[in-house]
Image (cartoon, rainbow, N blue to C red):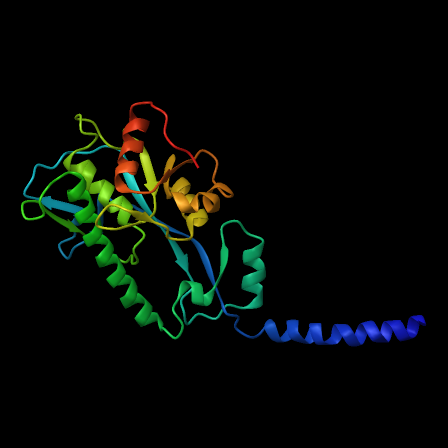
Length: 267
């Protein structure tokens, strides 16, 4: 093929690609951009009421409550909203950064839901998570919910992924390590995971970003749902130890072993 003809052919073939890229640069794409979000110590206080006082994340009545040391930090990710336009430049930028993740829009938000609908759904999921966490913790400790009342409060954060940390916080406040010490061993422990009333821990997604948030906020240990170990290990920040868990009992046992200097599971 003569060079001139070949060049014309290549140019003709490239033209549709260039046109598509040009259009994509200005058309919203079906993706969401996620990044590490805030972390909150569930053993501490979070929001401020109208009187200017901080509200404890975990409030317990009907049983003595321990003074705790160390921290149990639930972790979050922040994603662009369902109505936010994500362009080609955002997608390309996210591919080359470790503190960003490009996720299919429908994997983050149910199709057709608005910002308001998503916020309402997340609030409902958080309430379910809190109820399940209280039930799991009291069940583990063999305490009756008729006698011990647990109230969980966390402002401006939704979804079910704080369930495990809520439950651990209740256990630490009521029982610690069972021998007078703290469940945390004085460390800053972070983690993620849904929880069922029977104590089963479930996967949540976004673990690689949550480990970055945990390390940023001083955690040295991260509790991760076992099924998500592979997602976490590929991007583990330096100095952060991963401990896989499948249920509340396993998480408590692992923290007790860690505080006592014994071997603990690893991803």
